[in-house]
Image (cartoon, rainbow, N blue to C red; front, side, top):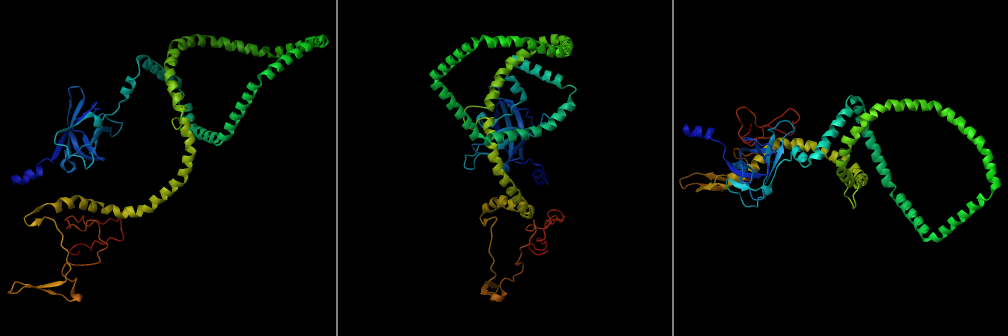
Length: 437
């Protein structure tokens, strides 16, 4: 009984490893350790190294150990909600790597911590952070009471993106015409530059022409005689514009007080923000349009039309392939535990042996002989071909076995697995099992 209790309540065998991270990234003792999304251990301890780095001790279940050289670890978050939602995600090294010893140390070069939002803000200097705070407050005041307009704008934003996509597509399709226009303009300017002497002579001739026109006083006198009538017409037009001046005066008077309030804001608050934003706009310009190929947003927009044309055919074909493979996946899915269990347990079961041989071994049965026990110790004699394959327990044609049919039937009847829901399989026969139903 003591041995049985020890076996039932003994902890799962595991191995411990020490991971060095740049920071603990809000990990907690008792947190989860995962490999490929599966929980394989827990966080045993969190401490500091001599140079103030995070030293995290984790345990890994024996079935997933030992880890090997080349193993990496990353701190990940299961979701945005909650503080203690971080876990350690381990990527085991190659199976050809040397196994790591118990309590082995995985250095910081093979680990990666989570980047927190406050680390990004700490990269900014005090003046930039202050300007960013004032900008956010200004946007909050500007959007106060305008939620309906903001919602309407958000609804129209997809249309604007589609229109912008069409514009980019049209610009991309007109590259040859735009290039031809620029080439022609360059050739025209080059022609002007090469004929500067003729252009200078043309300007001189124009000056002479103007001088000749100025010498024609009779024509000038005629123009001056017509000026009074022109001025009278202008006066009438200005009289008609007079009522608008009253409205402009009232507008200027009403804008006087807001202008006095706005001036200090523009000088003391908006100007520092704009100065601090200059580097950001410079970076934004580089993101939008940078010298070189395939390195900015403009190049990405130019690559989108060919990508759309290629996915126009690939996506429907991929969807049709998934639809076609759904029945096959539905058939194979309940057999997955049997197949994985065979791969997982066959090697360990077949490898162990004692003086009598391996614990797990197979024996082909051809049922071609008959054993006769007599005083001489027993003899083997050939069976007639018609009698072969009829030994007790030997059956053929078992091509419709259900999942779990290869194990002894449990008391609760959970094996073989027969489902009447989405996984129901008309080809599954629960009577086809070793030893019959």
